[in-house]
Image (cartoon, rainbow, N blue to C red; front, side):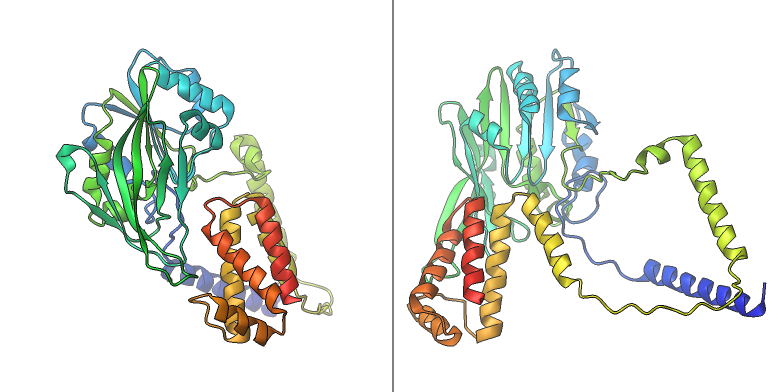
Length: 402
């Protein structure tokens, strides 16, 4: 190998080591994603709670579930009294899973669900409605429990909450165990904030068992357990009295799902070693055959503008998730930011005067501007938005910008 090739390889190796070293020592940004998995030590993981379960339930057997709820319950011995614990920002159950879960409860067991949102089939079966208030700014909320033992104990939460309340329950079979209290205010209309106090923790009787619904899963995350609110989590879980607890680590937002085509290859020892040997062989070939007979002339490709494709890809991912509330909220935030940056309009308070200013600066008809802004205020006030709302909003904003 020529001296020049050796120098190039040494430089490449040093640069690679430098990149690796910088990646290792650079500070990692805090990950605020909702995870709720037992291994995650990020703010909204459940590492602390899972490790403290034996302390909270000293007389109960704790079993971690890493597979589908249906597969576990269909093979379960129902003679042993147990509780199935699901904590996540959203719990989605298909019809088969729901049938097994209800059968499990009907036989005298219990289920603890702490989530911001549940699937429609479960909500319809239990005759309840869970609603979240989405706001631009994060405000402090207070939670408490109704039991006489916990009277006067209020706990505050200030970050990562969606002000999720249970707005409708089946009063014949439901007991309210806790409340959530917050100030509801409209960022677009200068009106006094409304004090809201609604249930966030209930117990519903089903057959011989109970279903506990808790709408503030953030209370069980590392951030709040280590931040002084551990007593609230312990008080909530004290309602569970059972011999065995199944901790669900499958229906989690932070669960790592490997869907690569290489999964099968890497799970088979023979194929895995064949793959590794092939990679090593290719690397050795590149190293020892790096010398060229003639220096190639590099082809410089023009820089392509991929921002449109990137935006379409991200938009497609959001659209496929079917979370229309989140899509509409982001679209409204971007549109208000557009008004502030393009026309220097204050969007803190939106009223008739704001309509006139927007119409004047954008050279758009006043009636068109008024209909658009009134539609935005209408969407902000809706608890649940549909796909049609999103399409109509997109058409109105596009027409305004054209």
